[in-house]
Image 1 (cartoon, one colour):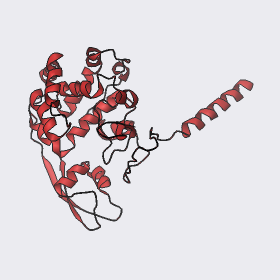
Image 2 (cartoon, rainbow, N blue to C red; image 1 turned 90 degrees about the horizontal axis):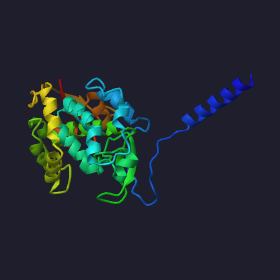
Image 3 (cartoon, rainbow, N blue to C red; image 1 turned 180 degrees about the horizontal axis):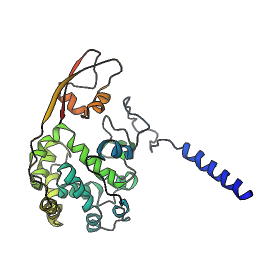
Image 4 (cartoon, rainbow, N blue to C red; image 1 turned 60 degrees about the vertical axis):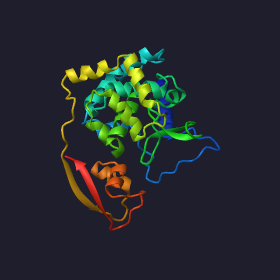
Length: 282
């Protein structure tokens, strides 16, 4: 009887502690506050996978094999994440070599300060519409908002989503999927990084560690090197009371950036009765 009472008390304490968890950041006094009125606070990066990309290309069940921490060096980083980079190449068409090289460069082979505290391997900032966890880190400016993930694999998946849903990167997906040199230069052209030598750095990493061999392996297993032409459905949406660009983007599975581009919008302000052009892939 006493043992049962103890178990009940322990269970009650666990439920209380779980219910008390809140969305946190490491915001410090004096750091700029990022305000996003369209950002729900209850969504997590695990929701991102199950709701949006699980059916597109599922992640492997045994995620522990991608958590060989601490990572000792760049070769160890490659061996840890090469397979997940190939998963992303099959799903989205981004060369695995590019994904790995960007991860190595942006995360310091998994040992950078930002990566260690956020699992953010690609230096992706919050941007408008980000709904997941976040943290602040000094980069181009002091106290910038960066995306935070509860598992490294979500960082790789979000990197794929980030590139494939923004119109400024769209031209990259018309390149051959194993043309890492043009991809490297294209990323710089599209504004992924401000470093003028960014393409050369990616190419040097790829060739030093023979990362292009991971691209070749994916292509040899059946992925076409050229993307098939996509068919699109074009229609309009009349803005109703309560609509936001973010809400419309989720309804039609299109990015906010793409809606703004299609409608020549300079910001996220829309008005009731406004007609928006929408284009979605079939």
